[in-house]
Figure 1 (cartoon, rainbow, N blue to C red):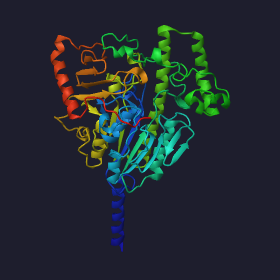
Figure 2 (figure 1 turned 120 degrees about the vertical axis):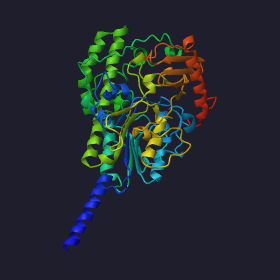
Figure 3 (figure 1 turned 90 degrees about the horizontal axis):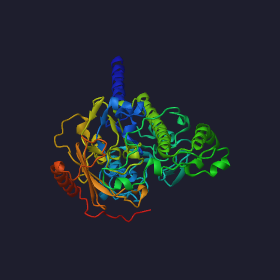
Figure 4 (figure 1 turned 135 degrees about the horizontal axis):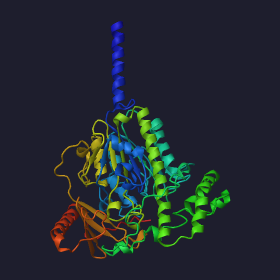
Amino acid sequence: MRFRFLTRLLIAAAILISAAGAGFGQSDSRPNIIFIFSDDHAYQAISAYGSMVNQTPNIDRLAHEGMLFRNALVTNSLCAPSRAVIQTGKYSHINGVLDNRNIFDNTQQTFPKILRGAGYQTAMFGKWHLKSEPTGFDVWKVLPGQGNYYNPDFRVPGGKERIEGYVTDIIADLAINFLDKKRDRSKPFLLMMQNKAPHRNWMPPPEYLTLYDGVTMWEPPTLFDDYTGRASPARKQEMEIGRNMTIVNDLKVIPLLKTKDEGKKLPGMFARMNEKQMRVWDAAYGRKNKAFLKANLTGRALVRWKYQRYIKDYLRCIASVDKNIGRVLRYLDAEGLAKNTIVIYSSDQGFYLGEHGWFDKRWMYKESLKTPLLVRWPGVVKPGSEDTHLVSNVDYAETMLAMAGAKIPADMQGRSLVPLLRGEVVPDWRKTFYYQYYEGPKRAHHVARQYGVTTAKHKLIYYYEDDEWELFDLDVDPLELHSVYGEPSYERVTKYLKSELARLRSELKVPEKDPTFPNHR
């Protein structure tokens, strides 16, 4: 009897140890994957990347416990195209989403569909922004279009649901509720937690409305860029903080909110607030707005005021993103899931925080081309490691498939980052990278259509409707202020980059003329 009892105890202990190793009773030992994705989160607003303006302790935790990628690039610096690239592992001209108008063909192959077919439970919460209904997910609840910061509506299967509260908190609530109550504990999971923040118009949550009050934020050295030394498109854009940022909707200089009826007359997202939320906004912005209107600022003083209001609201939104990432990480710790759960953090592209006097993205210049990418993979990634290879959002799908041990389709155009995450030497990794932006000067912000190629040291950009070129020596001119295109000393570099541009366009099957897709709204 004693022998049988001891045998049962040993068997039970073995089962518990096995389950714990797989993650809180998970019978399939393949790793879980949490992909946390924000909208317009600039790498230079993360303290692990050396931010001059804020601290992000929970995102930094991923860097301390995992790998930080120094050169994560995007194929097309715009919200919907980036998301389509990640879903498919294919460039915009292949997946059909060139810009924010295209409707994503949700019947095409995506990495969540492949993971689901391989036995993963898949979930998506937050900003989808691809117009069509999400497919490949067992559970989903997504924002319609851009979504709202306060009391947002969500698209759900078969309808719509409004949830009271602040959007970043709500998305984290949905993710934690899935982990706690809705996941199938016999399967590994893919959880995509996609924030609206810090997208324009940068509406912070009530708890952070006064964060940074009394602080004068560092200004980028190119805040008053005059755009000399570059091709003409840099001067023709409409994304300057001084000229193009709106006083009411962007910078929150609005009448005091005293009643719900008054609130209903407010522009855009402000009208969604309830009375309690409006009172908090009154207290936070009313006095500061009165002081601004009384000052009657002009010229550089007005630009500086706009920059300070913009950057503080932007960073207040990021403070909420960081806080909620911390909530998810602590849940994983508390529930025994952390050891077998990969956590990835990224953004759909970079963003301008006053560099060149700008906000927004779109350009092949550094601030919009580069995006944050941090990966924590316990037992695989060396804590505190960094990588400097040219990697891209076109690699994300392949990477998550490889992490799960799933087969990577041959028609995907990226490459798994798993060997880099393991710290392996990969001598044949890409040395050049292709980028293309399609919207053009008749669309938002009037940014010219462009494509180009970059290496670690040089960047060649072609504005193909203007027939103008730019070449930057990134070692000599890291701020990308002076094009050296046409200078005799760069003739050999130019020739090499043009040959690489032709090779990459051929290999990636980029058509000579921009494709058109009929699905527009």
